[in-house]
Length: 425
Ligand code: EPZ
Image (tube, rainbow, N blue to C red):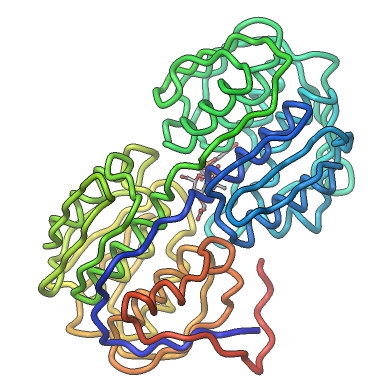
């Protein structure tokens, strides 16, 4: 029921510690199901999505305990095979327990994850890959019923380097009989983080981070202790916020090597970018310059930084063109930016952004996690005080976002709202 009140025009400066990566932590939590006993995962962000994944694991019978940002997942009595619709509708990533459940129990019953505001979000590549390993699927009352007497190694060609499909297949293949090869695999740093934890649990994996991953099936697996990598998308979000306010911010613990192309684009926009052992220093002295970018699977420009980049380029000198190649409806939020005086036209996968001198404050909504972050960035640079509603999206992906921005000098606070929130959709 809350809304964020942001008064624009304050320059961000100082340093912010970048939390562990949401899109890795969720998968490491699911991977804990592969072993009996207590797995400890450090540097887990306290965000809604991680709390939801903890609920998924508890629903399966695991015991989950938080100690600050360390999570202990004890799967000794995790005998459940079902993830209920109530949890899957809150977070599509719940589908990631499919591989581990099939391997551990030979069965799984997972509510079908519907689409979301950014696209149709198919899972056909997950299912086709698991079928080629011997799994069988049927659908009943919105649930996917999965079974596999045993899983056997296979050579799997992914039509598209899907992050989720690569991760589900990886977790199924580590315990299958024989060798599995995943061709055209996703290469995201989060995949490498998952593979590293699986190896610590006893798996044999080669090529994580490349387009060809080879897994020699084996097991059993033991519990592990793993520290989640820094969140490159959170780092990128704070970097863009620094640029939008002509700020000077150190992103502590950020890994520049996970953000190469993105940081090069920020430099093209006029930012000074200085990686160091401590993290990455971002400084912007003047109005950003227009530029073109194209979202692609890693190591391309991350789609999860596209909305934030549009918020920055809305105030740039000149006209920019953005092309979204990963999610078909990821420009839905543009109307909210145009409500703040931006001049953005979209046509299919392309957005043309004519930079304006300054955005002006208006009441807007967060339409998903990253679009929410984009609205906050737009508000930080805008003239006047902006109200942002539907904060549950922001809370899904960012821990204490407004508190950390305020610590950098932003004028931002959260206020209870009288109006009910729109459905999460
Ligand atoms: C992960 O989603 C991330 N989520 C997303 O971050 C991120 O945008 C995405 O990877 C791409 O980088 C998590 O890790 C929890 P995909 P995922 O499978 O695994 C199509 C955020 O804001 N596809 O690589 O769902 C699909 O429809 C979120 O943190 C199929 O067609 O992404 C999409 O268009 C948003 N069939 C494209 O591939 C399939 O079986 C990319 O999906 C699978 C995917």
